[in-house]
Length: 583
Image (tube, one colour):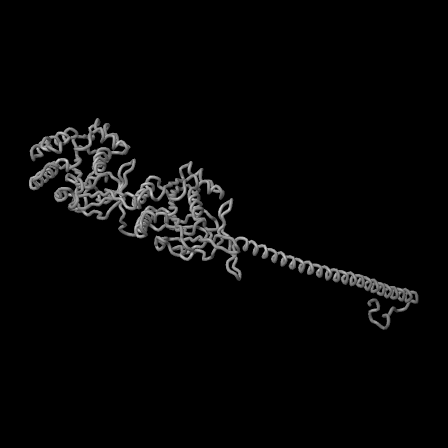
């Protein structure tokens, strides 16, 4: 339920009072809303949404801003109007019962318009309208449509006088009024007068190009106020009118330092092991079947694992097909869809025009609040217009996503291999990170290669990796470069097997050399042990002989001493030595 806001009127720097419409995007274009207490003309052809915009202006004013409104209808009766706006979720009859909205229906006989208005006099209309305003204290009025009132006027001077009188009557009472009018062949309106006395003129257009219809809005004039002057696409859906301001005033979006994973570990390693910058734009381009969608889905799943939301726009495959294909890679997306972390929106690009696709993306982003958005593939949009139109739309989309701090991945189908480093849509200069995936044919088989063409602000790998899609996920392998070029697939496996065999042979040779060295060491140790044992044996024998000699010498000395004692003679040194008892 929409909440009522106090003090809905805004004042611009020039002092112009404005009443917000509550229509998404329109208040941004008009820088605050429609001129308060003054008339605004909404002009357009049949089916462009004039009546709906006037009604939504009243309903939103009553619900959101507490300003009751009167809808003066000349073509649609209250029952039909209630049925029309119920499709937008508004209960017009309940609003009437609560005196927030009053619907006044005046049936005008085009053959005799004076029957209601009086002969060339709108006095009767003013009385009827004043009564309706007073009955609910209305602050807003919508008149639909002006041509019905003046259909029988032939005198242009009288018509202009009555028209000025009507607009002056509105201004005197300070009622913010929206008046609808049919577009004429030459002038803006059929009479060519209303736009001159209106303070604000909004042109609605419903055009068809290449069998695709698009509604556009333009603020033709706004007295005393700056406003957006471009054409803006708008969408009518179950939530009413959404207008998309498409102009980008400046490049003032925030640049984040945080990094987010690619969802593929070895691809993260190609970006310093950290992945992309948050809030950046990533382009994954390549030929058909090269694995672009797989990269995008692993990126989405990684965001969901972090507890973030991912919004996936698919233009070529249904959600069921995407889920089935990813299961074959070991990636189950269903749990993330079930818990609301992942939303896949699939539609053919020809369902809407380019601008409506842009409006729809804006609306879905505002509702879902994702941290990442995937467009798969953006190259499908070329079916909706020429390259310049698609480029313009994508530039505005990139600016919008960057302003929201959303990390965006765009998948692009490339044409011939010779044009791999240029995009058909010419937006590569706007992309922060560009990943290329391509097929190579060698040795009667096709294989995939991946490399990073550029990545602003990130020291990224300049190496080419073989891109493998397996039943357990995605892997990136180091490629082999031989005499005939890069080896992939079976050639790579053969080279790996050959290298493995060579490594094994080398390991065996090294092991043999180590064993021989160990054998020699042991032989040497054995020789040293034998020599040591022989030395110790000889050492012991020599020590024994020395001990025997010493013992014999001592015994001889003792014998001489004993003999000398028996003779009672002096004991002199042996062999003339002064120390006969030492050796």
